[in-house]
Length: 269
Image (tube, rainbow, N blue to C red; front, side):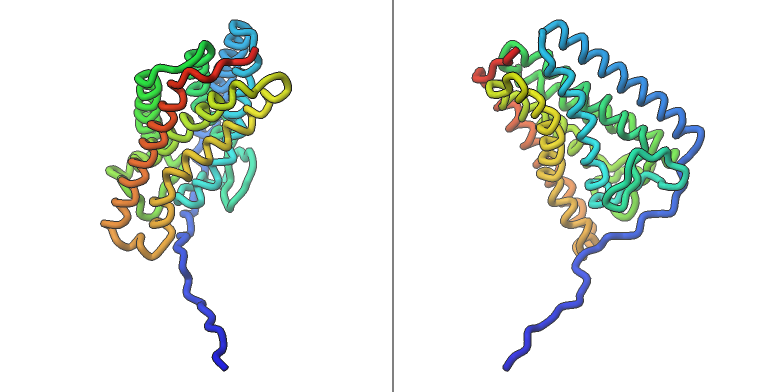
């Protein structure tokens, strides 16, 4: 009788992150800077809430805060680490320490994109060109804003990464994936607007992180699959996975523009 075959071959490739310490005083500066930006975005949500007599803008910013759950997952799969030594820790998950400045940065970055599109969608459909412009500005902002923190070691990309043109900046894939996850989150909210009446509006706080996870992992699965397999040893496959992930991110944004431009949703006040 044949016995079942067991396989002990390691099928994944999760490299050990570098042993790094959080740079100071940069971390403290970023703590206060991102905290101030997050507070400003929250205040802007209160202004919009009063202007449109709706609590939705506040829930959007709270959803942006909850979207931080995305960070340890994509950090683990995408080989990014926030130096744990000396970190002003917000929480730790998936073998990653997440500092407070990242939590504030999510509120500022995701929250601002949510509110900018919200300001256009309160009266109905959103112009496709406006969504694409928002996406392009977000991509450019991620590319430019990450240059100094990466050089200073505030967070560290390691191992081989696709579309990493210069080690003094983040790989380009991340800007496209991050921005797509923002757009998809607010698209889900727009899609559900006719049903978000009364207490149901609090569901926005969950729709935003759901959209962030769907947009990022739904676009980035080719990159993450290759990076964490033996295929990562092939430079060709690695770069192809990055290009495909960027293409899928653009598809996600295209689908979102199609939904956001439909005149079927009306905000319930």
